[in-house]
Amino acid sequence: MTQPIRIKDHEKDARLVRARVVFGAIMVVALLGVLIARLYFLQVIQYDYHSTLSENNRVHVQPIPPTRGLIFDRNGVVVADNRPSFSLSMTRERSGDWPQILDVIVEVLQLTPEDRVIFEKRMKQGRRPFEPVPILFELTEEQIARIAVNQFRLPGVEVVAQLVRHYPQGPHFAHSVGYMGRINEKELKSLDPVNYSGTHHIGKTGIERFYEPELHGQVGYEEVETNARGRVLRVLKRTDPVPGKDIVLSLDIKLQEAAEMALGGRRGAVVALDPNTGEVLAMVSQPSFDPNLFVTGISFKAYAELRDSIDRPLFNRVLRGLYPPGSTIKPAVAIAGLDAGVVTASSRVFDPGYYMLPNYDHKYRNWNRTGDGYVDLDTAIMRSNDTYFYDLAHKLGIDRLSTYMGKFGLGQKVSLDMFEESPGLMPSREWKRATRRQAWFPGETLILGIGQGYMQATPLQLAQATALVANKGIWNRPHLARTIEGEKPVDDNPIPNIVLRDPSDWTKVNHGMQQVMHGARGTARKAAIGAQYRIAGKSGTAQVVAIKQGEKYDRSKVQERHRDHALFVGFAPADDPKIVVAVMVENGESGSGVAAPVVRQIMDAWLLADDGRLKPEYGGPPSSTEVTASEE
Image (cartoon, rainbow, N blue to C red; front, side):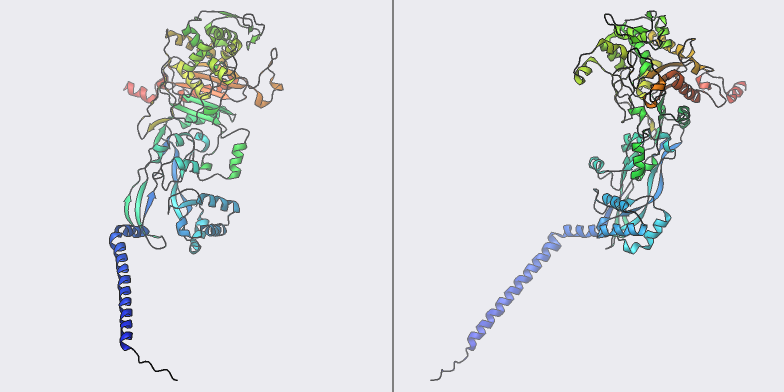
């Protein structure tokens, strides 16, 4: 039996089609609504955000580093300037696979794998987005040409002209002016990231570091329009940077050269001060180095030679060298004894060639083994008599002695703008108990009275202590900056002047120091022969290695670097001081024989005119022009 054929239900099919059409239309309308809503959200609600984002892709803000301030000596001679230089920089965001680009640079410029390591290290340092990173400095003309020819292989790499620090005087001011170098990761964390945008170097030592904020200036900006490849099309807006301030130093290049010549290539330090202002006139630490080596990056080999040299050219002996001051502090000890009332200028001590504490059999030797007989204050300073000052230190005691020496700047930083300065060491009863866990012994007070024992001082501190004797206790802190953009530096933390009960004590000690140079038995009288002015001075010899009781110093049995240091301090003219000089010659052995002639040469260079006569401003005869004017 066959199945009946069903008749097609057209009405049902029509309903199904209509339902599908309606559903499809609803879906289309819904999707269209979603699209319209999304477009509305993006173009209306988030219009500001996306327009800004788009603008940022087209417009970039580029920092304009300020021009660093210049540094001059007191006569206007440039000691630190900026010179143009070409460097190779890379912007990581525009270079794509930047490690591969570094490989291409090494290949094109025929550099070493070590250079490649340095480049990568510089690229990984912290920086702002789209900020070019200098990877190679001081490009030669050949290197610039090679980069230009291969520019198509080096996206994001460009040759940039910029100003870099230059020190025209080379090693002359390396330890005072200091030098600049690349900003490292540690420094980057402490710097203002905005003000140092586009700046890759910073002061590392000396004046360059201390006055970094003044020398650096304020960064500027410019808004530039770029294309898809990051190339600048035009400048939209510019804010000029504020250049750094120029600094005029108190240093005098002629006196600096004279001091270096006087040292004669020996290891040592020289400080010359104006006692009336605290201005540092000369500051020499020998041997020195060329600061230009550090500006754009010193090679590992060159740095190792400086670092490992036995003569330590990188070590600033003026500010960081710690030496027993020896007899150079005897004038300060004399002032302490007079002011404390334990001695008078006429008090006498018998010197048999040694000193012994009561109830002790140890002999503290005088440098003159035969002794000087009865000596008063004047003779004690002139002869540098150790026995007299052993006795004076014993009468003062460690507490008063330490307090008085502190007033002269020993054991503390004395400078105004030399951050590298060491405070030195002025021992005390409390210091020894805290550091050595021992009581203070009377014999230690005695050797402290002649500048030996635990006491350590820098040449700058010795110069300042001498300046206080020269200007009768008035504290003018030593400083290198004479003016900053025409304004004098201000001492925000002045040190109190030394006020004595009897101000004439300064004159008494001054006279004794003059006898050192001009007295018939003065220890440094040879250095003053032919001087056209009165000099007040004091020699000193600081032991490097101790000598056993009863033994005599024999230079032939002592290695050269174990021999005594030679020191000398002095000021002139003695009655109206205009210059104070402190000299330390490492292993020079004789303060009066080696260091004193150096002081004399430096004083002559400052006080004498070209014709060899005393300058009129220092009491010499008037110049020919002045004579002519008076006659007219």
